[in-house]
Amino acid sequence: MSNIKILVFDSGQGGFPYFQAIRAILSPHHIIATIDYLADNDAFPYGTKSNQELQERFHYLASALSKLDTPYDLLIIACNTASLHGRDIFMQYFPAEKLVFTTPTLALSSLEDNTSHLILMATTATCRFYESEKNITLIAADALVRWIESYWDSATEVERLEYLESFWQEYLISARNSIVILGCTHFLHIKEHLERMHPEHHMQFIDTRDYVAQETLKRLTSQRPQADHGSLTIGKLFLTNNNQSDQEHYISIIGEYHLEFSTHKLI
Image 1 (cartoon, rainbow, N blue to C red):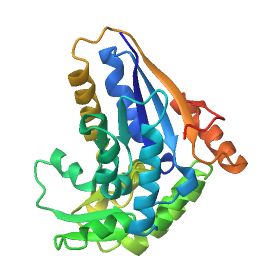
Image 2: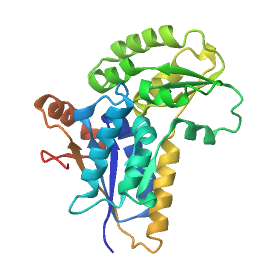
Image 3: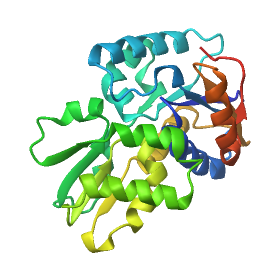
Image 4: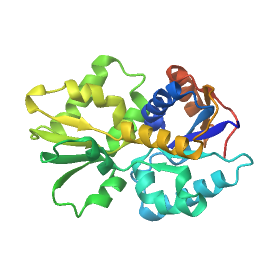
């Protein structure tokens, strides 16, 4: 039985929680697979770019990934901005069954009751897709994305709480009894902190991590229903720009994910 190759892709480290969720759901099924990670740090952040800039970038990425000597069997777009702006583009280069996307409203599928006031916390580029939705309050939090990417892992707990409290005071202070959709995968890094803050506000924070993990398992079992039993191999982390600063940053944080840092570029 051949090894199934999976690639989790994001603009930065936002996809790591999805990587972990996919690893956790696949491991008990003993599927013979290797899961790699690609951070498009050369184009980070996506959220402040124009539609044209995003489309050009996703055409480049999809084309390059489709031309790999050994292509991936499944591509996980663990980025809401890339999923929204790049879905049609990636589907020009890959069959639909080889793609898993994440979009903010998929998080609502896990709710038994979604009559509460909805808040979408996402990038500016993602919020553009929901401007006509009158029942959703939009919070474009691009600065928070950049802070998580650059400082979250090195910040002390006091620094983290101070920053998040200032964010809450600016954007969420008037919210009560609301459901907040974490519409940028970077925000999953701070989800547990947000859930502990201001319990008197009765806020619920939701994301698409479980949906993406379940969809990944579904795709793999449908593609290879008679797969031989084996083990999941944690593969490599690739960057699109191997500048020294980003290399050092990612090397310092990938230990908990058991990824091997690759000095060679995937694309």
